[in-house]
Image (cartoon, rainbow, N blue to C red; front, side):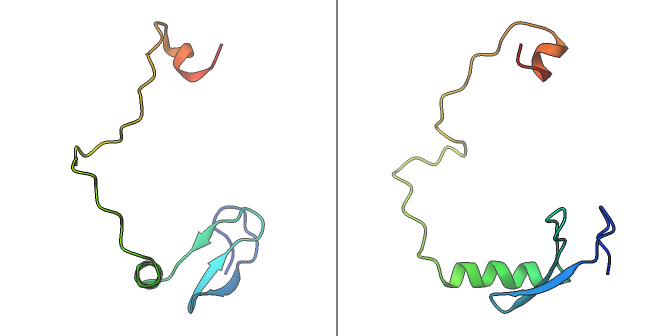
Length: 80
């Protein structure tokens, strides 16, 4: 099968018992039906449970927010 992005022949490899197709040129990864579920199951089986949430569950991160600069459309796209 060829890569839908750049047409390079996809390479098949085995990762944790799951065969995945990837493009060696653009590094895109394609999974067949059910393969993502297998990868998720196997990653949870080998990892410790998540740490307790310290008492607050606000649903967003605690990182400080940047102040928004006053400016136009181009100021949002480019860092002048």
